[in-house]
Image 1 (cartoon, rainbow, N blue to C red):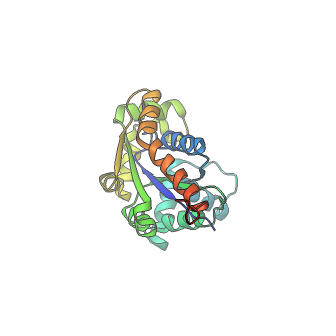
Image 2: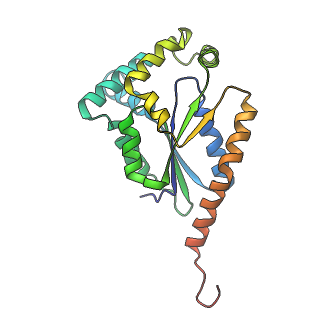
Image 3: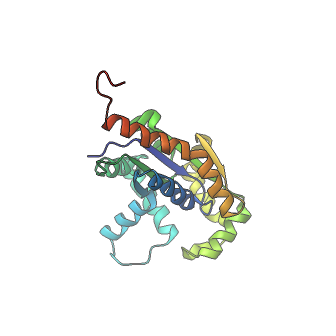
Length: 214
C-alpha cells in the first residue's frame, strides 16, 4: 500500500503535450529520489478493450472514445478515476516518497472524485495549445489513424465528455505553443520547489528529531 505525497492530474485536448509535461514532472521527481506512478486513463480503456475483445487488435482513437463512454454510461462518469485510484493505492514506493500522475482526465466527475480522494494533495494541470499547433503535432506523431484528420473532429468528442469544464477547473494552466525547451523550463521553475519540499518532508518524517536535539 502506497503513501502518496502528491497527485497531479493532467487534462487537455489531444496534441497539447500532456505526456511531455508528465515526462518532465517525472524527471524532476527522480532528481529528488521521489518514486512516481504514472497512469494514462486511455491505457485503462485500452486494457479493457484488449481484455474484452481481441487482445492484439489495432486500437484507434475512436475505439478509445467509444469504449470510454460505454464504461462511463455503465459504471458511472468517474469509473476511470476509481480505476486510477485503485492503481495508485496499490503502488508500493517505500522507503522513498512517491507521487502519482493521472494523465488524460476528461470528465468533471473524474476531477471531483480525485479531489475528494486526495483533497489538497491533488492538483489538476490543464495543458493548452492552439488548434493549429495541436494539429501539426498530431500529424507528425501519427499515433492514431485519425491524427491525419482535423483536430476539431477529436475535440468535439472530448467536449461531449466534458473536457472544457475540466480545463476551467484546473489549478494550473500550462500554455504549450512554443519550443519544448521553453515548456521544460516552465515545468522546472514551477514545480521543482514543490518536489524538493516533498522530499524534505519525507526525510523529516522518516527521521524525526530526537527529544533534546531540536
